[in-house]
Length: 278
Image 1 (cartoon, rainbow, N blue to C red):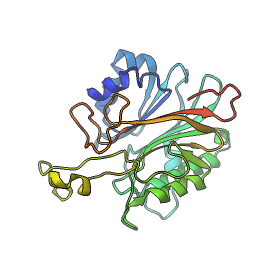
Image 2 (image 1 turned 135 degrees about the vertical axis):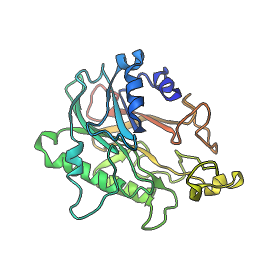
Image 3 (image 1 turned 120 degrees about the vertical axis):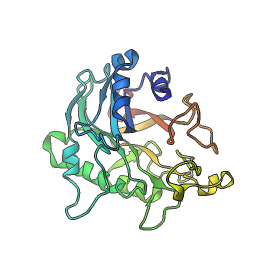
Image 4 (image 1 turned 90 degrees about the vertical axis):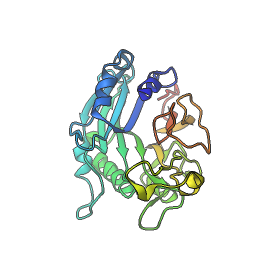
């Protein structure tokens, strides 16, 4: 598959952490059977896989950086940290949260999350993740890296969709920043897609001439981290697989199979005298 070819490319094979969302079980098996990926990464899926929808969040950890791979999965701890009495629209496989220790002995919580279509689970899941970390003394010194399809919107319908600027305020309130900074740009899009009438969800279909106005063109994807832990050294988004993002271009395409762009960042540890990168 083209997705595996992109992950194997010289652009992304050197990544320390890769978080993926809406991944099928067969994709995980295929990735483990690709010699270059299996040699380079610990490929981690959730213990409680979604075999019905077959959409799972997955984490790749570079073996050189994280020699022992994942030390524990704490997804259930996150899910048990939701506010009582509140229904959070998450499905099996949407959340994957693990702990891992890098080669320098630095402990991490690393999470991958796929938000519901309207993004209404995004804030509760982040809050639950932070609550889970703070509730366990053995996690208190862990640094968080959280890659997510937040499904946030530039012009959200109040009460029905998650506004991107409101989400920015939310992660800052938890002492986090993002690859986009503390204040995301609502017009820095990571999706640009629309549906034809040749698919079953006709309520989401539109004419070609309306694909920009009626399509899904929104700033949906984030990499979150502790504001006191890291700062962004470099950042790019990609909807070609070639480290290039073509603005005002609909995707997926024949050469780029995802309806979300790739989001990549190089982080530098603030406390590191040597400026170690991740």
